[in-house]
Amino acid sequence: MQLDPETERRLDLLVSETGRSKAFYRRKLTERSLEDIEDYYLAMAVLERVRQGEEKVHSSSEVRKALGLDD
Image (cartoon, rainbow, N blue to C red):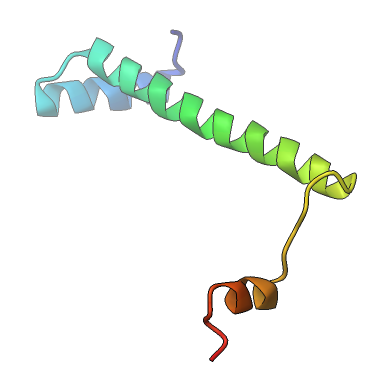
């Protein structure tokens, strides 16, 4: 994985401060980034279905009423 010089410098500092390996942090970066990317693209897919009328939406008042919070 190629990182820009500033990110590489920050990674080096983190490695020296914590004693963990670069591989450990690169793995963490990949895992966290993948989670963020998955969240984004899955949300965009739902948004597109909502826009096309294929996904049911509920107003906050409907949700409050269904949960019995409108007392």
